Length: 451
Image (cartoon, rainbow, N blue to C red):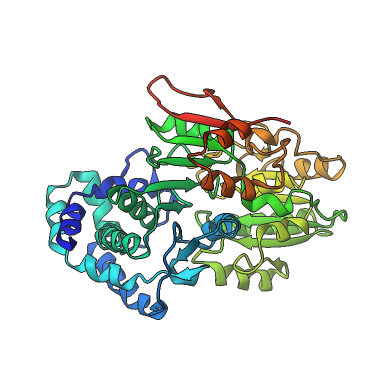
C-alpha cells in the first residue's frame, strides 16, 4: 500500500501544486524580493536547514481519531478556522510549528522528500525556461511537495478522517492535504482565510466557503471549477463586528506587508511626522515579515509605537486608531468593519508594479493616494473633519452582513460543514444563485438568505 502512495506521488503535478510560483501569470517574482545569491544550491541548503529545524517541533504524542481534520500552515490560517473547529464535535486542528491546535510533525515529510531528489533533478532537465527559473530559486518548495503529500496520505488514514478542511488554496502544504484527500476518496473543504486575488489558482476543492461576492467574482475570472461554493462571511470577524474604533482622533496606524519596500515605509513615516506632528503613529508589520525586528528597532529610533502582530490581533490594533494607511493588504476590509477610515498607499518605488489587487479602491471601499504620497495630507485632513461610515456596502465583501448570521459566521460555517449533505438545512439557509458566473464555469453557488 505504501508503494502505491509512492507511485501516486510520482504523478503529482508539482507546477500546479506550486501554482503561485510556477504560473507565468501570477507575477510571483514581482511580489517576493529574492536574495542576491538565491539559486539551486542555496535553495537545497535551505531545504536541509528547514528539515533540521523541524526537529524542534517533533512530537511523539498520539494522534486521536477525528472525523473532521482541520489543517493550518500559518497563524493567520489558524485564526481564521479555530472558532469553526471549536464548534464541531469530533474534530481536530493540526498545524505545523505549533501554530495552534495539535502539532503536525513535518520531519517525516522532509525525510520522504529526500527520496525524490533524483526525480526533481530529472524534471529540472526537462523543464522549460520559466520552470527552470522557478526551480533554481525555489527548489526547496518543489522538493517538499512529494514528502508532504505522502505524509498527508498516511496521516489521513491514521486518524481516519472523513472530511479535510484547509484555509489556503495555494500554500503547498494545504495543497498536498487537498490532493491527499482526493486520492483517499475523502471530501475536501477550503475556508477562505484572507482576501483573494485573480492571481490565485482555480478552485479544486469539493466545497468552498468564501467571504462574499467579491471573492466569488475573482475566482470565477481565474478559471473553470466544479466546486460547490457557499458565501458565508468571515468567522474571524464575528466578535469584532459590533466594535468601533477609538473615539479620540489621535492615533494613525501604518500596516506594512512583507512585500512592501522598507525605504518607502521610512519615507512615509518621515512625511507623517513632519506633516502631522501632533498625531501618534503606530507601525504594524506583517507577522511573517523577515524584517520584523528591524521594524521594531525603527519604531524605537523614530519614537513611534509598535504593534506586535505576532501577539496583538489586527482588530485590537485597529480599535486604537482612527485612520489606517496600508498597501496591498486585507486589513483594509477589517478597518471598514470597525468603521476606521482607510487609505491605500503604495510602498513601491515603481508605483505600477502592484496596485489594488484586492479591488478595494476600484469598488470604493477605500481612498488611494497617488505616487509619492501626493494628496495624502488633504486626504487625512478630509477624514479628520468628516463623520466616517465605511460599513455601508460591505455586504459585497461579507455575505453574512445584514443577515441573521451577521456576528455568527463561525457558527454558520460549522453548521454547514456538519450538514453539508443535508438538503433541508441548505434550502432553509441558502438560495442557489448564478451571479458572476462565466459560461464555462460549473460553480454551484449558495448565498445566504437575506433578513
